[in-house]
Structure formats: C-alpha cells, structure tokens
Length: 133
Image 1 (tube, rainbow, N blue to C red):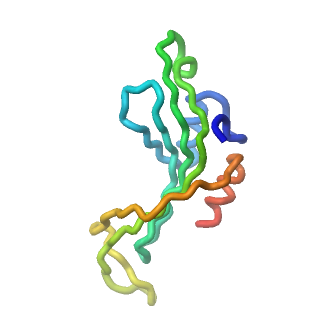
Image 2: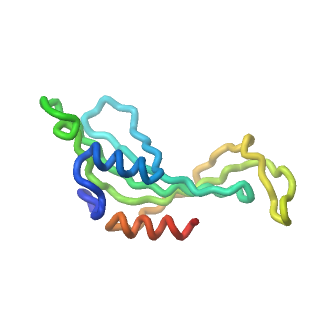
C-alpha cells in the first residue's frame, strides 16, 4: 500500500500543512539518512482510564540532494495507518461521578501493541477516528 493516501493534497508541504491543521502531531525519525519515517498522529485518552491510543499515518520521507524547492527535494510516500495501544500506568486519584480518576502526572507509558489498519483513503481514516469521539 506504499504511495499515495487518497484524499490528501499533493506535495510534501501541502500534506504536512493539511494534517497539522487537522490536529495531527508530526513525529519524524531523527536521522540524517535520505530515507526515514515521518508519522502524523492523534492521541485518544481519558483521565478515567489508563488506556492511550495513538492513531497514526506513517509515511516514508525521501530526501534528495538535488537543487530545488522543499517539495522538489522531499517526497512523502504513504506507508500505512496504525493503531498503537499503551497502558499509561497512572496512579488512582479518587472518583468523580462514580468513575475512577487517575493522576496524569504519574503517567508512565508502556507500549502494549500495534496493529496495521486497513485504511485506503483519508475519508476512511477520519471515519475511524470519529469512532473515538
């Protein structure tokens, strides 16, 4: 499924600007390699649970040595959508309205697992995210 995610604009700058405007955080491998991973993610969590879900779009960023604009030398290839699950391991901090409340300052993330999502368009991705709101 490497390549383009249907529904996203064309060009690295346009994709980056669009996804950030949609509320995504950008995380990129710290590397000087010409190929590296860049992910755009949204986190879903609640202070009444120790669960944290990261829903992310992963791209391969390819950087060339050529002369030209950023879009001429930087290309994003869609690699897939993923759901990462974490146990936040927070300490209980009482009850609110019959629900447990956890102290977010005690958060210590433990990765539980990752699964690849069958997402072929940005519209499908937005529909999936909507399930959590």
